[in-house]
Structure formats: C-alpha cells, structure tokens
Image 1 (cartoon, rainbow, N blue to C red):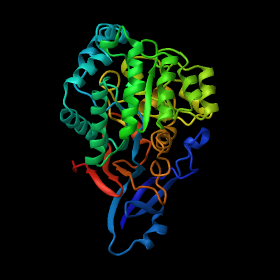
Image 2: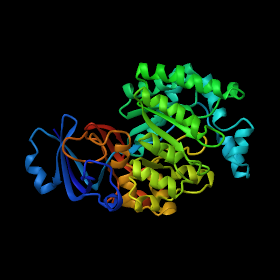
Image 3: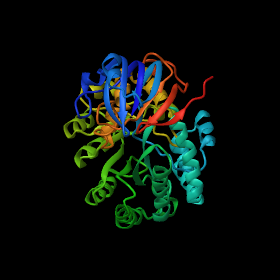
Image 4: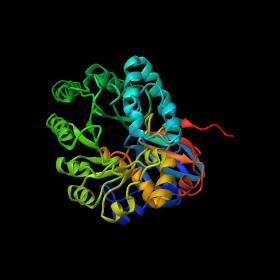
Amino acid sequence: MLAVTNCAQLVTLAGPARPRVGPEMRALSIVEDGAMIIRDGRIARVGKREEVEPHIEPEAQLVDAGGRVVLPGFIDAHTHLVFAGTRADEFELRLAGIAYHEIAARGGGIRATVRRTRAATEDELFALARRRSEWFLRNGTTTLEVKSGYGLTAEDELKILRVIRRLNETTPLRFIPTFLGAHTVPDEYDARRADYLDLLINEMLPRIAQDGLAQFCDAFCEEGAFSVEESRRVLSAAKRLGLGLRLHADQFSDGGGAQLAAELGAATADHLEYTGDRGIKALRAANVQPVLLPASAYVLGAKYPVARRMIEEGLAVVLATDFNPGTSPTPSIPMVISLAATQMKISLAEAITATTINAAYSLGLGARVGSLEAGKDADFVIYDCGDYRELGYFFGIELAKEVYIGGRLVFSRPES
C-alpha cells in the first residue's frame, strides 16, 4: 500500500466517464487537504485526509505531499518525439523574416529532418528519444502519443515505430504510437506522388498493422502536403486495417481537413488554426476531439485556433505540445497551459482538463488514466506549489517535485 497525504489540493478531475465539454471543463473536483491510497499500482481511495487516513494500514509506505498540489500526470496527445538533428538554423531564418513555406521549398522543413533521421541508426534514435522523454517526465507528463513521419520509407518508418516500442519497454513513461507516413512526399517521389501513396497504402500500412507497431494513423492534410482526397485514401485504408485515426487539419488554411476528420470518424483533428464554422460544427456532430497546439502557433508567429468558440460549441478540447524539431521544440505542458490561457483565453481549469482527462479519452485511455479516481492507474504528480493555477502562472519553470507512474516513484527533483 502507498498512501499520499497532506495534499493542499488533490485535483482529482472525478466526473462522468467520458470527455468533458462546456462548463464541465472547469469542474476539477478538487479535494482540499486531501489524501489518496494506492494498492498494486491502482488508486484505491481518494478523499479528505480525515476520511482516508483511518484506512491507511500500518505497513503502508507514506508520502507526505507537504501541503502541495497533486494532479494526474499530464497526457500529451500530439508529439513527434523520434527524430535526429535539430532545425535551429531554420528558427534563425524565420526570425529574419523567411516564411516556413519558403524554407521548405529550399529543402528545409520536414524533409531536412527526414534526411537526418534516415541517416541515424535505430540505436542512435532510441538514445536521442530516451533523453528527450526525460524532459517530458520532469514537466509532469506521464503518457505521450508519438508519431512517426520522419522516415518516409517502409524501413525507416518501421525503424521509428520500433524505437517507440523500445521506449515503452524500457522507460517508465507510457507511449502511444501513431503512424504518420503521410507527413510529406519525400524527395525521391517528387514527380511520383501516386507511387508514394501506393507505397503507403499497399506496403507500409499492412506491415505496420501486421506487426502491431501503431495504434493510430495520421495524415498531414494541407496544401503542400496531402490533399483531402489523398488523406482520405490513406486514412480509409488504415481504418480498414483496424487502426484509429487522427488528422493534421487546417493548420495553414481552412482546407476541409476538419470536415474530413468528421466524415471518417477520426478520434481527433489536430491544429485547426484556420478551421471555420463549418468545420467546428462538423467536428461537434461527429464527436471528434480537437487537439490544439498553441506552442506551434507561438513559434511560427501564426494564428491561434478559436479555442473559446470550440468550447462554447461543446467540443471536448485537448491541448498538447506538438513537440517537434521545426515548429514546437518544447516538452512542457505547463508552458502550453500558459499559452492557452494568455493567447486563446482558455481558463486554467479548462486547460488542466484539456491536458489530463480529455487528452486521455482522445487516446482511448480515459478508463485508465487522466483523473485520480478509484480503480484507475496511479499516475500522479506532486507539484511544488500550493494552488493548481500556479502551473500556468509561473511559466518556464519545472514545478514537478515528484512523478509517480503506476504508483511507482519515477522522478524526484533534488532539494534546492
């Protein structure tokens, strides 16, 4: 038995067994002066100290939260963790006024990372990704969705997905793999787009599904990447093979990506910076969760999605980092929470919901993680603050003091 006591705020997010919408996103079910009992890696009891402490067995391991905040581990529902190299050079070019699309036309962008990732061995990619995964842990993230998409050959995409599997097997974090072979058309297929689509649909997807290397399939539906019809073909093939669907949609234009996600019954539509009324209504009608990525808009100096409108329309909004080498090189969900609050006018309570229970449901994990309720996995974080709102108020600071996954301590910050 593990007992966690003396929690100034035990932010449980207890509530209906589904994604939270509308006013529900502001209901965090906070237990003041709370405590929690864990058995065999699962939460057994949650409540006020006076209610919980009489049930603590004498031999229990005691964790004194020290009057701090305790939250469920953050769930990052959109990352590109596995890649080689950086694009710091492109960051400097954008600061000088050169647009993202112009950099890509010069051979930069996604294709630059593809070249470096192809040149790296599986062991090299694993070492890089394992190091980065520790950055997420230090920021309170316990579950990550991770996309492939920087290989764009059958062997290189499989290499990336095998790295994700190894991370699952050798680190305490939980990784959810997504196949993103439809990220961009690689250099060697510039004049043969149809051949690359055939490769994706007829070779890559069947091999990945057969080997069980991905739970989801994604596509970058955008001008300069894949059209609506091309994305439909890839995702429809993935759906037939039993993969869940996610979609990069409407990042640079309102091109119908949101409507496609709704048509196909995708779990999520991600980005949505330019999604208009028709797209929002389509997502709502199909119960597709929007995954909003404010750090990407911040880095690009781009338009932010209309998050307030989406919440008011009843969408179960998710926030994620979009960690990647080109447009969002941050592993920090607290930074994303701050950006969401200041730039998209999401309340801090809504942002917590969007990075815990709603994110969990977007990955099919809502019955296991995302809230602190009896029967769920004991993934939780003790933060060095007395009020959950400080997670968005203090930005650029790693406030996680201790991180537990399945009731096991996996990170502890040394006392300063």
